[in-house]
Amino acid sequence: MAPATGDLTAAVGRAQAGDDEAFRLLYRAVQPGLVRYLRALVGEDADDVASEAWLQIARDLGSFRGDVDGFRGWAATIGRHRAMDHLRRQRRRPVSGGRVEDLVGLPGVEDTAGRALEAVASGAAIAMIAALPRDQAEAVLLRVVMGLDAESAGRVLGKRAGAVRMSAYRGLRRLAQRLEAAGPDTAGLDPAGDVRARGLPR
Amino acid sequence: MRFTGCDADRGGGAGGGEMSNQRTRRIDRVTAEQLLRGVPVDAPGVRGGGVGRLAGVLAAAAAPVRVGELAGEEAAVVAFREARLGPAVESRRQSMIQSALAKLLTVKVAALTIGFTALGGVALAAGTGTLPTPLDRGPSAHPTSSPSAGSQEGAGGPESPRPSPSLKGKGAGSKGTPSPSMVGLCRAYAAKPVGARGKALESPAFTALVTAAGGKQNVAAFCKVVLAAKASGAPESPAAVRPTEKPKSSGAPVEPGGKASRPAPSVTPTARVSS
Image 1 (spheres, rainbow over the protein chains, first blue to last red):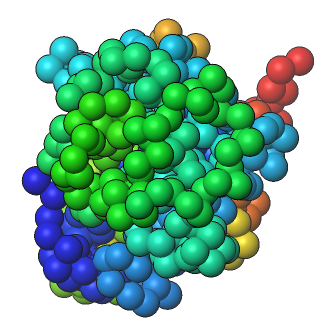
Image 2 (cartoon, helix red, strand yellow; image 1 turned 180 degrees about the vertical axis):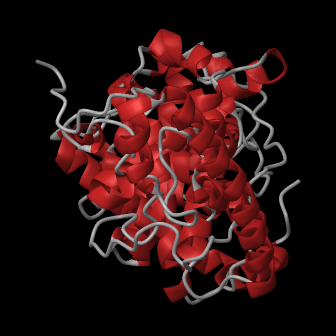
């Protein structure tokens, strides 16, 4: 289970004081969301870009001020900047497209037998969100996988909170439409649609 | 409540689903907020259709950590340690590591000297002539003797408070610049054919790298970070990377990898690299 928000906020302080176990805790709490968010910006290169982001986070942590929610937003901002640099370097357009039908059976990179199903569902879900128009994909992912509120997500994106809300709502609606059109077994996800317990905060 | 704010999006062309969305239309702001926050949505009629499946997709997107997502953990922690090494390292721990390193280095230098003796003749003279002082940077041909390799594990530096040369630069990782020996090892690793890398890590020459990365499975990710940091940092300091008993050209950035770990006991200082 993920550590409580209070513990993570304490970890921010300890990491700033040089405690590398606290830094490790933050990494584990934030990295999964960060890499999934970056997936929508740089596709396959998300792991590399996330690694670059962590280098900068490690280096600049001393100058950060705030709690763990602020830290998530800060990490997302750094990740986004690194992703933009990466895209400039690659002179490549952000990944887009990918039809729902193609997502069925999309493999996780390193599935092991025990987690294969879950990983496929998770990877497919990210890919599906990433296939939205980019402003919508970013808004949805920042909120759902990075756990940011609309205000924080707005700061990451350089937009007003209202604009982020609107992008996220549109993204959700479009996703729902695609899912409805694609039929019940899309992406191996549970058709009953229960919201399962989340591993990431909020 | 209808999703009034989004009517402008209607013409957006989300495929053929546009006409069949009476249920989807019921994603009002409250429901959308619940979905975005991961709060269970219990509005009537939500279980079926797009909204229910949408909830499933979002839950899957936010699912607990997947295998492979934390592969960069050790590299990140190493970067963190290196970034901390300036002011904020506990001094007691550091001094313990220092003395341990000093002992280790004494042994290694002795071993090296014996090795040179075995080589004999001119090689001996040339080799010992460039042998580093014990707490100088160890020869990168023998990674386990490198002080910075030790500092990867111990978070402390040997004599100098900054084991890696402090390369001030603007790019990412300029402060957390990986130690030169790790850079060399990573280049050597990267220079190997992909198929041969796993096997190469068995070699004692890569022990320090494997240790620093926190395991063989992490080496690839670790090296990506190390080399990326190197690339974005300031130019290499030749003195720090200079392998003592190898051709001088082998440490040059022009020649990536390969040579850095090859124990080539050549004494020609200007050996031609590839002609």
